[in-house]
Image (tube, rainbow, N blue to C red; front, side, top):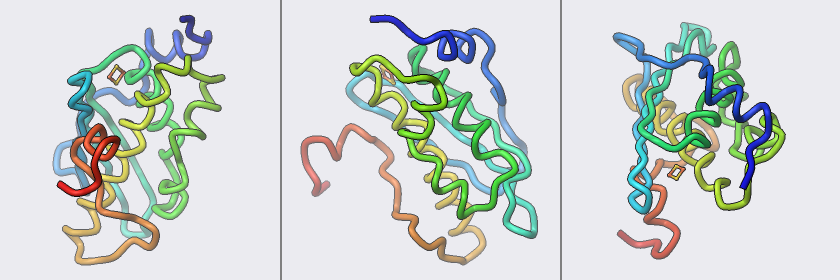
Length: 146
Ligand code: FES
């Protein structure tokens, strides 16, 4: 298994690592299978633009690199555009991930969605196209009802 140079670069020098105090939305997701956890903090301004974003992760190299890239991709975007930052887009931006590591990139996407969900709930709004995120991305892989 080998990582692209971009993955290694984002892993060695992650962007937007940390936390935001009084964030507009915070989302935490985990993957029970590997035990990795990621938390994303969003700072969203009055116009619905992601002014700042930070993440914390307890995860593998791929999880760190994808969170770093995902936060770079959502920064400065509108909520609607931030929602379009899929794990596929993140993988592409990183020049791909080894197949066994693709699931790790789901953590970043789901954590961003969870943070947007939290923001929507706090503000009593609905974000079109956003579904209630799972807190454990592994659960849905075997069974839908929990
Ligand atoms: Fe768990 Fe990568 S092995 S997120």
